Length: 248
Image 1 (tube, rainbow, N blue to C red):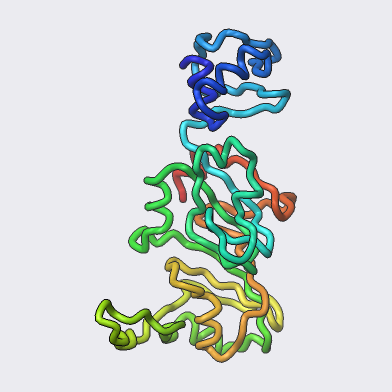
Image 2 (image 1 turned 135 degrees about the vertical axis):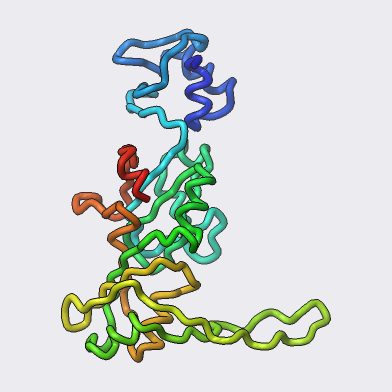
């Protein structure tokens, strides 16, 4: 692939801007400055440097972000900054999207990708991708509460629905049954849940339905991926292992 096309595919701007970066000596490969936009390279295992920063080539980007509290998982946030602000410009230019959403006050593992097929696979209920959450609860976590969550609790509609086109109020939806694939207390007020669904505010609503309240929520695991202990809030890494991606 031509070097200018490589930069364009990796989110470094328009074709003209990418060519300009190369002409200006901003791009190097294996330490050698390349000033020819038409120079061709095998992209398998390829990496390059732009303005001294190394970038690996990925046909599709998959990013693991340690989401801090106070950020919305939206490109058009309403009340708080977007998690997209935590990513460098090339990834934003590639239009990576969050895989599902974490609430503004929820922390932990968030995946972002520009692979629409992967987003569908990871968010579709029929694929049953497990996600692990750790909740800090207001009241002690009891054995009865854990059993209720694994047996299933009713989730009532969280807010009023908009009127129908004629202006008449819509009838309330019947309650939904939600259950955890696994649940356990990890200390007196700590609850660990494994879910394969992705309902609106699901963990908070399930815990409320079981007679408790979530005061803090963290996600340490998504599918086969675990949040690295040395990845600070707000930092991100590439997910590059084919084995891990295949297990998602």
